Image 1: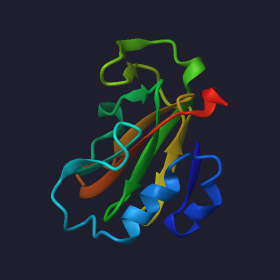
Image 2: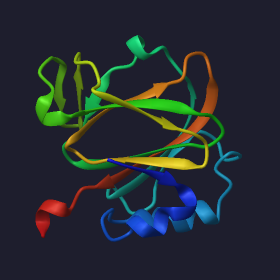
Image 3: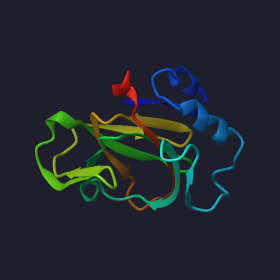
Image 4: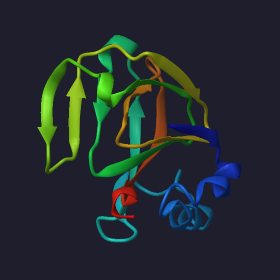
Length: 154
């Protein structure tokens, strides 16, 4: 897991493949004014989901993990907490892995919770189970960047 300000994103280009390509797109587009949508910047290898969300109570948010993709969570005009737990420590599967959607859900409680305000980002690798959108009652726009995890191919 990585948490930092968007202005420092270039420090992570070497360890997060295609992050630079997303940041170039981000620099040239006002993602607050684009409609909520999914944009494939590099086929299925780099997908940007622009979403309008309503934050939930922590107990209404579930831990999730992915096997094929790295998630970058970016609240644009709101703040949220995101729970975290090592995926290998998750024991209570509530929705088995869905290969088509690349997601598995857990009933476990997060072991840590991080604050991700607007202007910041959080990167979650497949080994990071995460619990996004903890922001009870807040309406905000967020970006979820999905980057194909190619680390195992080195």
